[in-house]
Length: 223
Image (tube, rainbow, N blue to C red; front, side):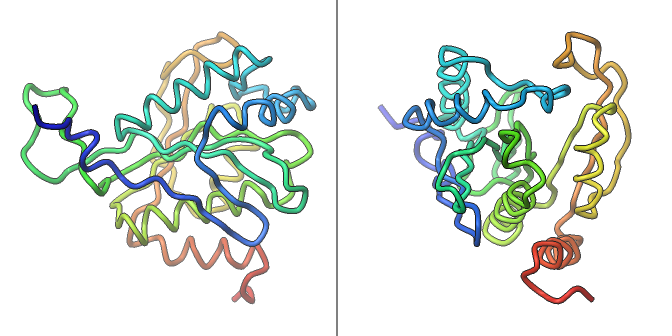
């Protein structure tokens, strides 16, 4: 019996290393560290779902790993090198593969390819002590670099609850384009009906976004 295409061609999982951040494959080995990070000031998670307690965190990690095994997601634990602690999580997700024949019937999942064509960045959260430190910004740089420079994706999508001014400001500071607001998009983290702001970065825009990120991280002189 031939192997499933999911296990033949799925993107190779990698560790992404930067100056102050290392993105490591999300696994059950870091559950306890994630629980500690998530137990810091939880008032900062007003519009973000973050697991509470060890059982919830185990379920969260297992679900993320199951998506990764299908080639649909690449979840990471965020290690802050300054403290050598895992301080949160993020992922490249909704990976789509436009190579090969179109799936049929419409809406069916296509064959997983070796290189995604488009992706989202999402499910990002950080413990309170790592917020506002540049950890999130460098994490975005590492994932965007992988997506645009290694995978050569056409588009990265980023989303935020329309009420989440902090997350929207961080996305807009990247230079991402606001595509619009989808009304009544999903259930919000506070159990309300959430409107979602959709942003995108195209491959042609990546050099500008990259230079802006490097400048804000102090890795190059700002123009």
